[in-house]
Structures are given as C-alpha cells and as structure tokens.
Image 1 (cartoon, rainbow over the protein chains, first blue to last red):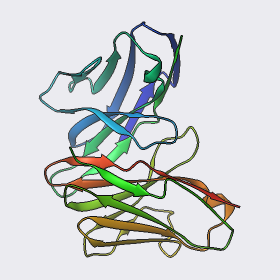
Image 2 (cartoon, rainbow over the protein chains, first blue to last red; image 1 turned 90 degrees about the vertical axis):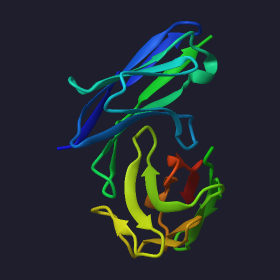
Image 3 (spheres, chains in turn yellow, red; image 1 turned 60 degrees about the horizontal axis):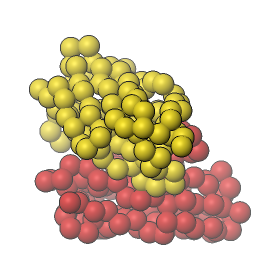
Length: 114
Length: 114
C-alpha cells in the first residue's frame, strides 16, 4: 500500500533555532518527492522537488535530503523565523508517465515562537 | 513561474444552494487538474482528477453528481458543489499540472455552508 508518514506531528521551536522534519514513504514505483509549505487557510507552496537520483536540494534556509534506499526524506530548516510557522507536507509521486498519483503525508505543524 | 488562480477565496452559502469554484492556470496550459478538500488539521484528500476535454475521474467515496467538475479548456477548471450542506464545509484546493511546470496549487477556497 502506498503510504507517506511524517514526523513529528507537531513541533514548537524558538526563533533562530534549527529543526528537522521527517518523511518516510512506502511508494512504488517512486517518481519524485516534494516538500510543500502550507500557511493556514492557503494552498501549499512548493519548497523542493527531488527525483530518485538526488540526495540533497536546498531552497534558501530549507534543505531537503532524500535516501532512496531507506525511503526517507528530511526537511531541515535553518535559523527559523516566525514566518516559518506553517504546516509542512511531504508528497510522493508514484507511477510512470501518464499515470502519476500523489500520495500526501499528514503534515508536520511547525510553530516558531519569538 | 507557474501560477494558478483560484476564486473565490472564501464563500458562505445557504444550505441547499450550489457554489462554483474556479481555477485558472495563468501562464501555462494545464493538461490535468486535481481537486482536493482539506478538513481542519488534516491532510489534503484528492477528490477527483480531470483532463481537459474529458470527464473527471472521481476518487472512491466522492459523489460525482454532487461535486461537478468541468475542465473545458486548458486554462480553466471549475468545481461546483451542488445542493451544499453544512458537512460540505471545508477547504477546497485545486492543483494544475502543466507539461513544463509540474504541479502548482491554487490558493484554496474556504467554503462555509450555513
């Protein structure tokens, strides 16, 4: 069964601190993995997209890693800011050309405190 | 970058009425549109997938006669919630897939049925 699990479910950190969010998946055939940031009441915004051959990808203070062997991904946020407070969703795309399917994780709710 | 415009952002309607939500891809042609709903603190749930010019494919448990999807052009898809009831109150989000840009989400529509 295709599944994406994220941890922790929620996280509270102080402004300026770093944090790491985890995503484990059992998806086949794997196509790519995306991390999205979703502010409350808004649509998700893409942070990174990683294919099978990519191990690390950065987008500003966000760095995503992918271990295709263990089927794990992480999103590391450096020097957190209050605006980082949001839900972070891991989405794995499964399938081959023309038959893609999105499998969503349940998200990690991050709250950054001043 | 690819932009998907979703309207309205918020709508309140009376029980029994219908509501139409629009999603437009502004700078690319969306060959496929996805419609999701999201309940508070939960992940996005795929409702249906539509390809331009053809009937939408609905996920199991989603009533196609209640949630009418029209994808008449490569830049516009609409979701109409017919005979809305309070339990249809939710956050609805579209996602568009273009050949060059991958997937882009709309900003979402908060539907409240009173």
